[in-house]
Length: 161
Image 1 (cartoon, rainbow, N blue to C red):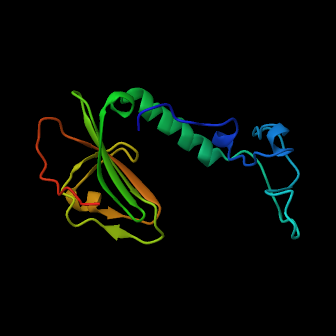
Image 2: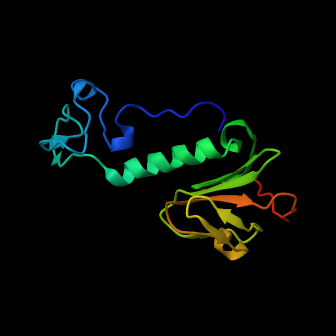
């Protein structure tokens, strides 16, 4: 999307909380341990306390997505075209003179099959080639970043919203 990504201090660690006193708590660095916390200290019901701490998996996700953005200028300067937006599925394309990348999100809790999507290419996230069938199948809560071959026309079905 055009514009700058918004990452608030602590998002990359898995931190939550915005209201006082959460806005003044220390960052969850991995070398420290913390007492369990409640996500809503103002809850009228009984508070539920959860273990808190540095989320290594989420931190690696942020590092990887930032790295992809740095190494693929199409994410910041490329043409943006929405291909399909319905329910919990979004498909859009970023295109520049150097590369074209399709971004596909399945934000639902069920697997989907996009029968009219006719793409093949390199999955930037999982670092492997994808066939047309691979591109069409998305597991629940899955996304794909598909870089298609330059100068090759793929017969894609433009979904109607």
